[in-house]
Image 1 (spheres, rainbow over the protein chains, first blue to last red):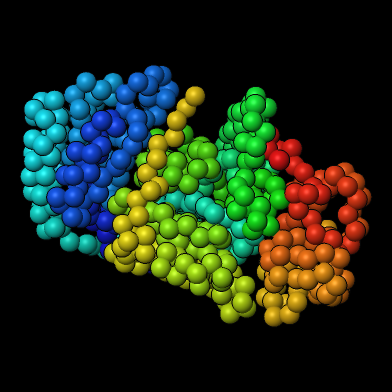
Image 2 (cartoon, chains in turn cyan, orange):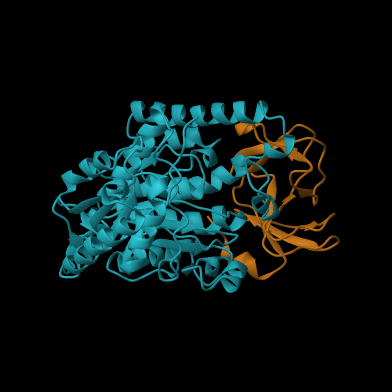
Length: 389
Length: 101
């Protein structure tokens, strides 16, 4: 008998762990209207972004795929698409991409409504109605195999690789062993670990995809840093990482990969795409906290697990971000932002395995409705779509 | 895995038996003796420099352009000879991966 959680069944058979209405602008021009609609209907969330127009090729395609995938994430009971009307990424294309989920879906276009005030009024009425419909849905019990967690760390220090990440690895393994899904990413912070990760691939094909993914990222970084005229801008890891005792990207990577435990990698997924099966996957995304979380939620993750040694308050709209620190001093300083104090391992009060079990139990509670600190405090900084050159 | 028994004293952790560095588990001061242990090996090392919490010290002499080993893997190379008990960080090691420092 596997572990279970209480979630929301969607019409496409996916399981949500939150029941929000998402207000999604198709272009940056409609961001404020989307924000104002969300303001009128507390409980809805909006997705501010700077893109959707003046883009071409793969860059626009990744924006389009990601916005569609965010709308399809099962944490959202309904979606209001907000367009301007003349943008390159049409609001109707966005809505058509979300329609297969069969969730509540409406489109408001500013230039069709007349002006921004008219669009805010129409969108607010729609969101209010959707929210009321969503409020009638009750949570029911599902096996943990319906959960997908996204792994992302930020503000790393030495304790991340030593404590918080390996403890999270235990929790990730436990979920994957029960048929659930977990996604590792931050390719810039896996440089130097590619051979170790490739040995954990289910087959040769996945092993070479892992090697290629890291190599492509490293090639890109090499060009960016070699061609830079500004030598002060070539550091791959942050000053806080250095201060925290990390001396190289490989040292950071060796700690970073421990979030994924010991499970086998079932595949590599591209940004804006979703895995076709369950298990542990690698998402091709650079290490920016927001770009990673956005890619994870687009892949279908209902929860983000976020170790942070230095401490960061950020969150994601409509998707709980569980903050874990391995640094007891950071926990003391940032108690209002950090959910789990894995620093207890450093103090000798818990083993890594016990800490991993605590994290796993917290995942089940959060999946069933327990709110995390970033969620309660309204942090939503992590929505940030990656760009391609 | 993490040996929690050693956390209560002035100590540094050797993560993998193959490592030539240990990680400071408190702020450690120059002139102090620091306890390190790994797989039954135990030793007190005289610290030649301050080692901040989370930073690394050499647990054996490391020649110039030799591997710095942590987690049992190379995290970079030294750009100068490093004495046992010295701090190891970006001032005396480098890593060419990722095009960064």
